[in-house]
Length: 198
Image (cartoon, rainbow, N blue to C red; front, side, top):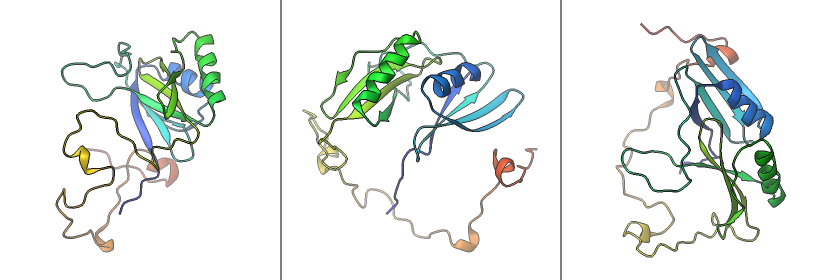
């Protein structure tokens, strides 16, 4: 079975990398750990935790999105509501609330969701963000809970991955056929340049 170790990186977009750096690095304290760039394009990475990064592409014509209330239903094509970043202590949550408010960002009251306490805000790009502290002694990762009044049949199958829902792999890629191709960033670490696209 595949073992996941976190979110390697979330990739967002900005039209102003400097404002983005000021917010994520300098206000929130996430180290900037990698950066790629050329005229009209930058791709920077910020350290969330030992397993998780946040990345931003800077594209010249990107504009901040209109701020949307977290979890408010929408209509039409839509793919993303908000990101929640975990914090280690409840004091961290209050510290973030104070920092965001002092910096002029609207930030919600602390909300009790039963298994987490959260605050809600937006970054300079209009991205809806949440910060959450796990309530001590309640761990939904170890003890999943459901309170859906009308769960679907597939939901009622339980929290564990169900076998035989998808076709089985009939032929795994043998070691001798595995190829890894250079991409953006390989030149920074291995000195390998990505072939120019023709």
